[in-house]
Length: 220
Length: 243
Image (cartoon, rainbow over all chains, first blue to last red; front, side, top):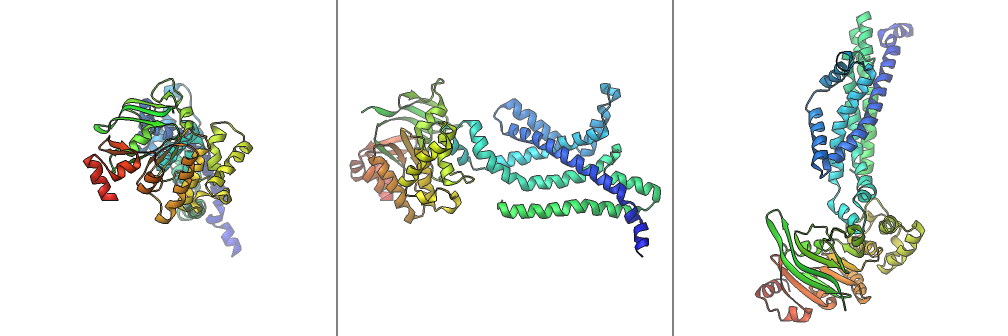
């Protein structure tokens, strides 16, 4: 009995699926960290009164949100290449860049929304005690806004994690790609895809639960 | 006594809507001026122009000898001279009461934390909240929040205090404590401009009352004269509605 389970495709596929899951997490986490930096700048840029900064940031957000991530990653991978630029880009780097640029646009909206949601009186109170614009952002607005960003950022983590499955088109060794490799050889479609989905859920469900708890605690 | 605030032909428009239509006013040192008027009369906008929370469309405002609109004026520095108390308190919810009060002195006047706290504690005592130094604003009543807001403004050692309807958001039974604090400030010689609906306060504490309507000063004078014997028909009709 035990032997039958151990010999099944559910278990046999696991070693390579775990490698894929590692790659999925690596791309998601690095991409989101860089995406947060990009998104924070773009989000604050969209709140800027400077027309140029505001315009550039708005174009970035609208273009990224208006096109599919699959097209975006192909664009990065195919265009940054021997044919056009004289050098190739590593496919994992292309995948991380795609998450960074894509999530960055959504995070920009999260940052903008959170900063915008802080009562205008907070800003005025800061300025009336003589703080500069930058000090007011740093000591008053930003600490309050960060709290409100946590739930939507967690949500973005789940979305970006699932988006990485699209990178199997450029043969990045993420979870779904590793699953496809396995069933191409064994024809065990059901067992493999079930395991792939369970592994995604093993990350996304706990993340949701933790988020819900943080949300309740922050009361936002 | 010299003028603390001199306002000349102050105009303010929001888009095509002119809210202030040429205000001339003076506030002397240690004077308490109460601004009354119906809502939409421009009294809050007038007050907010005195520390440039609203950009001035035209005209001039001079505070303690400095022109607000002069490009060479350091507006951040000038704002430290002009304390402001808001209708909705605007305390910083992520900081304790003490941190609310010491933030300005530490970041703007560059005091050390110890120096700032040493100055803050007597201020908390003055507003009757020395036991609340370490709590967060959310656990305070409206009246307590407003008194913390007053202490926060005082921590910058302002030359003038502006009050924008400081008791309008409070439950009636909490109004008294805030007015008491303001009264004691007036007694100490603080120059104050108070936009208020508290006619009792205006009468008792105000040296002068300004009645505004439709973006202009309709009438001004000492409180007893203005309340008991208003000259302008607008003032008469406003006072008859609220007294």
